[in-house]
Length: 247
Ligand code: BTN
Image (cartoon, rainbow, N blue to C red; front, side):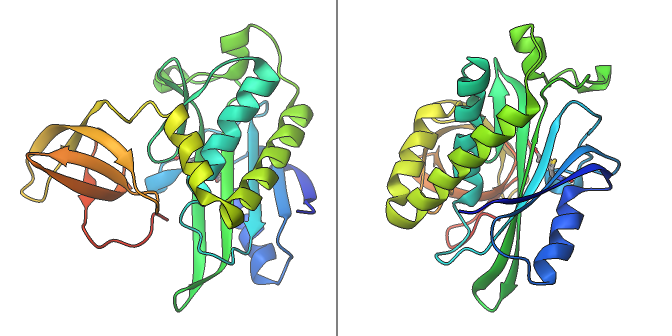
């Protein structure tokens, strides 16, 4: 992958800026990085707090074999980058959270534009708390500098991350099973009880046992297994037996 990086001092959201570029035909590998975002957002429309000191980037991808596993691959890439650059072990919480010691240090926001059943492009947004401060309200979050007691070099973090993403994208084309294996190894979700709201509206605590080849989370409910394709753990999850994509 030839990454073409545009760095901005401040932008509303790198996701919006990258979408404009993707719509106007920018090549796969176009990356928008911002030092700060004024309107960064995360999954489920939540605000993504984006002051200077964090990493905020969106890559334009043009996937040929479906985009479903891109978010899981990206989570693995971020966790490996955290280990390489900061020497800290990160864990992955399904679907897209990167945690250190149970606290969120980064997140992935993947969006796709479809033409029929084909993804015309995907926007892979990644936010990682590096040296930025966090407001007290985000007490369940952490930063890499808080975890290590030192400043993290954002340029190096980005360079390592793009290399890991490059490797991950290639693996998705040739051996997607290895991406899933890496995700399982880093998972803080599998083998643990998670809270799920089932169709009746009832909240039940069930064990997350696996992820399917398409990235769906597999739960053990009663004497059967159910797949979850979207949602967040400890919140409402959407259960479906025939759902076909994660993003
Ligand atoms: C989440 O955990 O909910 C995902 C957070 C993703 C945040 C990143 S920061 C770069 C890109 N631009 C945005 O507005 N969001 C993503």
